Length: 254
Length: 157
Image (cartoon, rainbow over all chains, first blue to last red; front, side):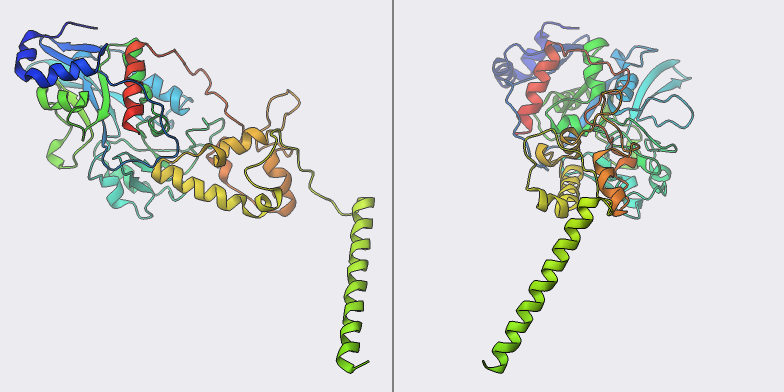
C-alpha cells in the first residue's frame, strides 16, 4: 500500500525530514494507519564488500505492524520454512516463526502475532548455555553454534518466548546456507546468511512482496533508519518488556 | 682412508640400499594392485585454493577456521566455504546428479573411508552442492524490496 506523505507529519519534523526524502528519491512509502507512514527505504544500492565481519555499531531488528497483519495469513511462516529448509510437516518439526492468537476479553480485540526469536540484547538462552553454543553476534543477532551445541535444551527452557526448537530427526537435503542437524537447538537466525549477503530476512521480503508489508527490517541503532523512526514515533512495544531482556523485535498495535 | 670417513661411506651405502629397496617394493605393490589405494575423483575446477599436498594435510584446518569466522563473525569467504569445495569436487551419480555423502563415491568419503577417519560435517551440512530447497518459492523482488536491498548493502559497507 502506498500513500502520499501526510502534511501533519511534514510540519512536525520539518527540514531534516524533507532533506531525507530528497536524498532518498523514489523512496517506498508505506501507510501503516491513517496518519501513520513508514518510509521503507533508502540511499542508492552499493555492492557489498565481501568478507566484512559483523559490525557492532549495528543492531538488526524487526518491527511488525499488527494492523497490517491479515488474519489467517501465514506467508512469513511458509517463507521462513522455505528459506531455511524446514519442510517436513509433523509434531517434531522445528518452527522458527509462528503466529500466536491473542485475545483481550475486555475489549474483544484479537490479534495474530508473528513470534520468532526476539534477538534480545540480554538473551536468557545465552546466559544459561553451558557450552557457549548460544551466543550473540556483534550486530545483535542471537545464534546457535551447532558445532558446540550438545543438545541439552537449557536454552529452550530459559527462553520466555519459546523461540527455540530442538531437531529430533536426522536431516537430509539441508540448504547449503542453513546447516541444521539432529541433536542441536535452533531458532530464527534473522536469516543471517541473507543479511551477510546484503539481503533482507525471507519473512520480511515475502510480506513486502505478497502480503501487507507489515514487517520492517533495519538497524535499531541508526536513528535515521525507517525502523528506528517508526519505533520512536509510534511507540512500538515489545513482548514481555517487563522481563528487561530488550528484544530486537518490536510490535505496533499489540 | 680414515675411520670416520669409512663409516660415513658405509652409512651412505646402507641408506641408498634401503631407499632403493623401499622404492622398488612400493612400485611393485602399486603396480600389481595388491595394496588398495583410494580412488579419488577428479575435481571439476581448474585449480584448488592451495596445492594438493597442502590441502591433503590442512583442509580440515581451513574448514574449521572458516567455520568459526562464518558462524561468529559473519565472514563468508567464498573460496573456503564448504559449499564451494563440494561444488568443485562434486561426483555425478548414475542419474547425473551429484551424489550425497551416503554414496561411497562421494569425494570426501573416497579418502575418509580409506583412512578410516569419520567426519560428522554432513550431519548438519548438505553434502551436495548448492541444491535448492524443495518447493522453495523464489519470486523476484519488487521495486520496494529492491530499494530496501540497496539500503541493506549500504549498511554493510
